[in-house]
Image 1 (cartoon, protein in one colour):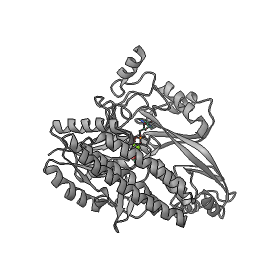
Image 2 (spheres, rainbow, N blue to C red):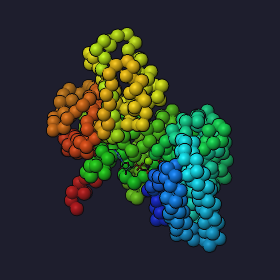
Image 3 (spheres, protein in one colour):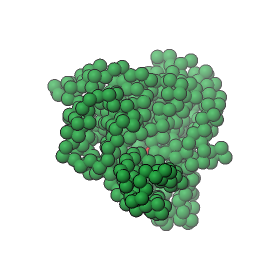
Image 4 (cartoon, protein in one colour):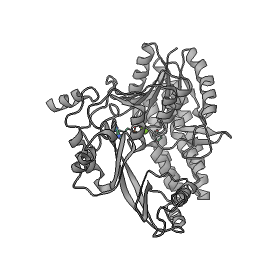
Length: 472
Ligand code: ADP
Ligand code: ASP
Ligand code: MG
């Protein structure tokens, strides 16, 4: 037995052709004598659409909500018809899809009557994406000779009750995951479960936050434990920047857990920020791989990455941030003042990304959210408060940035045409971040990329892919 967790993201199950590619990848691992445990996301964009349906229903637009659900039902049924060829199995899957969408429609109708979308109802609604996709994937895998067995993730991934961003209860998961999955794996079966979804201790459906299927994969991998956790997505691995923003981004061959965690936290969407933790605890390598280019070796995330001659490994961007300036003429270094400020963020359960202080003011950056007016109202009891949205944080991650002379001068020279609002360096050895206007973010990433990845270390970056692209 050689368990490997294989998590397939939304694009890797977005239609029958993508599911076919994912099936071939799983069959390949079986042929290598490995024991795959498969975790799948909802089909691409389904979670967004379920959320739109929920919002429409909550605004009383029952027809609009049901129309979104109906389009999703058709998309799932059409995909199932193409993906599962056996008439009997196809009919059973189609009935199952109908049953789930009937239940979803009941929830949407109820919501359109009560007009109140609670986080708990939102989680119930979005859970249908993974609940259905995992059933579909399992059914099609069986037809292709993979002995897939569907497992309801909510039985084994248990969380607290913070709906929409629930925190995994690792002690329970550590017990339930091996108890449920290892007997199946021993029998030669391939468990297939939905990512992202979980339940609280009372059995109510929760979710792990957007992009949370990566975390489900890592939790399962940590609890089994697996030899490797594979994150199958639509890019060749962790790249030197988001390839959508910077088309000449290079694949990073190997990166440390610490560097990957920093990138994920500061916006590299390719990994959910909490994914690394369960892997670190058990020292399980995480591979980021491309389901459209399965022969590419991807990115290997391990505890100690080899030395890199280039100053940075990758550039991440976190958008939709706000800066809050708290200005008090008498605060100055007063004992306990900062703790009063942080207590307010704590009360609103609002994480702070960056802090800078001057003699009279404290500036903090947070995700833009609808609690900002309430936070500002509480802060204004201490001092004058201003907040401004549409900001972006650029985070440059690399080895020992703190120890490299002149690095800050090079970074700010590369973006001398862009106004920088806040800077943080030195808090971590491997991260240098700064805050700019959101509208400048893409341009800043491209300028930084051009400056720092002109002559990349071939031991760490896939420079051959760049050469091949230039020569064709
Ligand atoms: P999945 O649905 O497979 O979980 P995501 O859309 O969540 O995939 O993440 C993959 C996307 O992450 C890529 O398409 C890419 O645009 C984006 N991305 C952002 N930063 C990076 C980066 N540094 N390296 C690779 N991809 C990145
Ligand atoms: N389907 C969820 C989302 O879109 C979880 C995931 O794909 O990881 O956020
Ligand atoms: Mg993702």
